[in-house]
Each structure stands twice: as structure tokens, then as C-alpha cells.
Length: 250
Image 1 (cartoon, rainbow, N blue to C red):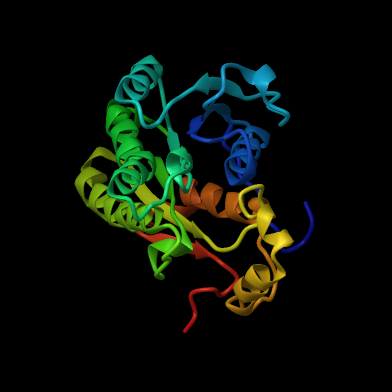
Image 2 (cartoon, one colour):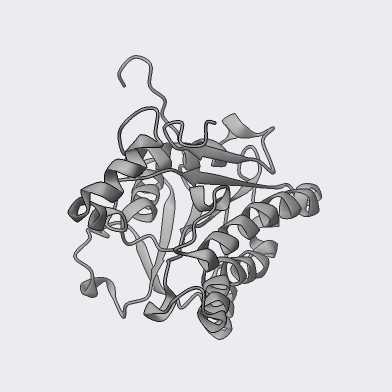
């Protein structure tokens, strides 16, 4: 280990990362795996063979987060769980306009209601965790939780709701020994943001908001998730940690 660095040991911990097949979710899952955890990831495709991403060492489960039956089936199949990372989410559900009330509602289901249902479905397993520092739920939110985003109002509203849910669950579950926190990634270099490269005016506008003048990396977000899930954060619950290069500064 190099100077001024940290490492985490999650040996034997059971971790579930939704949307763990690409981008931030995959970085989080891989970091937990490399720290010794038994890691489950979810995706929407039929099997591991349907992904180009290297999912070696990760236990893949198909999940449609918008389908209550799919969510309940996954939750009921999990025998033990120490860390749940609600990462799965997307903009423009079904390719629709989020100003359309139906698409807006779909965005809420995808980015807020589904994660809430899964978390609630896993409460017994999380409360039974013996992980040092307690079990953890980490919700992945967005800069759109805090700033207006007129392109994706449904996604923005859902992520703001997930920030509020984080606080409420933290207070509601503190007696169960379950900590609930969130990370708010800034503009991160992932497949979701890759299309901005074709539109320099959009990318330049985003960089202008970032005092560090660069995109973040999925690994930088993963480090924050592992910290919040570790015993090093045993006195941290109900908070949202921005990993944004200063994006939210006035």
C-alpha cells in the first residue's frame, strides 16, 4: 500500500450492488470483491454472457427494479446481507420525455420506489448482520438532487426523494443497527456521461461548474461507498456525501 492511501477489509461480508454491471456500480462491486466481500450484482439482461463487462467473481442476478415481483423475488432469495448499495437507476425511462406525466411517474418508480421496495424487503437480513460498525445501506443519488435539471425532472425529483429517504430510513432503522447513507457523484467518467464528449459545449459547461476542472472516476465514488460501509464510518448515518470535485460549491 502506498503512502496516504486507505484500504478496507470486508472479508466474508455479503454485499449487494444493484446496477453493478457497468460504470459506478461495477467499480463499487469490484472494490468490495477485491476487499474480500461476497458480492452480488444485478442487471437487466438474461445472464453474465450478455455483458461485455468483466463480472468475474461477482454473483449475477437479473432484476427489473420497476417490477415489484422481480424486486420481491430477489429480496426473498437473499439469505444474508451486510451492505446494500442502491445504484441502479437511469434517465429517460422507455426513451420518453420526463415532462410527460407518465414518463415522470416511470422515472420515480425506477429511481426511487424500486430502491425503497428492495431496501424494505432486505430489512430482516440487514438487521441480522454482525458486520463491525453495523450493516449499511448506501444510496447513490446525483447532483440533480440539489440543482435544477430541466432535461430530466423525473430523475431529478426521484434522486432528491432518495436523499430524503436516506435521512428517514437512517432515523427509522437506527435501533436495528443499520446505518443508511448516500453518495452524490458529480460528473463522473462513465458510459452514461460518455455521449457528452460529442458535444463540447455541454461538456465545457459541466466542467465550468467543477472547481477541480476534471471529471471524477468511478473508483473515486467506490472509495466513498466503501468508507461509508466500513467500521471507520460507524458514527455516520443519515448523511449524503458529495463526491463532486466541488460541483456544489456556491
